[in-house]
Length: 351
Ligand code: SF4
Image (tube, rainbow, N blue to C red; front, side, top):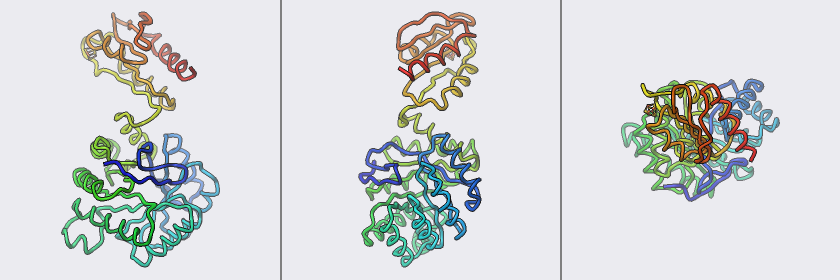
């Protein structure tokens, strides 16, 4: 169930009913500060709330310091594996959060990290992945099952509690959708920390989007998940867009325009596909709670239109009836529909 704890990562609140945030991770060489900053900009433009940067070397944490100095106005999380000194350097550079994979960090190193976290304004994610579970847990379960992921996560939460550190969020990711979903469901019954939800290594854009939507969407429908990351072998801006779309499809994204359009058939009287695509593109960066329906004929058109902020449906060949806030505005020629809808959106935005 939804987490009871709330933590902040920079200015973003996570958990306990806070808006669900969308995050991604840069895939530039972190030491290339200019390229990394450019990618952060792209992620922000796509609507990203938090960004993670991998820090595998000392030079990368030096670059991270420079990135942080440039005040990106987005919380930055350092991704750390194997060498705890990178975590300390990142924390001392002023990073807003770090992610560690406990299977790759020993207990002594964890104590050092916690000491640094307590001295700084910094949060921690325990990021358990099926590819890097502790050896003894893996030996017990023989393979990275949901139970193994959860045992590792809970064990590490307890280790941090023993060190009196609870500014924590947790993830238990597998590339297998069923394993991930089962693990998160079990984990949500065991701990109160905010959950970072995702399907790891989900694949290229199309299959990865489907896997992520099924996995993350199932969990969100159960009320599980406080921040999400879609992991695609592709453009990071796409990851953000897919993440936002998953939230939008569940009504969990504030300020989003929901465009309902029919699949079209032989009854279609207007260019539903062209109009929907053009309007979707136009609305991409407009933040407004609104439903727009575009349907091809009178079969379902009037019903949807009367329940939409803007509703249009094919009424006769090349013409549509237009409704605004449930009231009929009139019948318009097809070539006027896009401009008309864009104008109404802008009016509603500024009203
Ligand atoms: S709304 Fe009309 S045009 Fe669109 S799919 Fe349904 S029947 Fe066909």
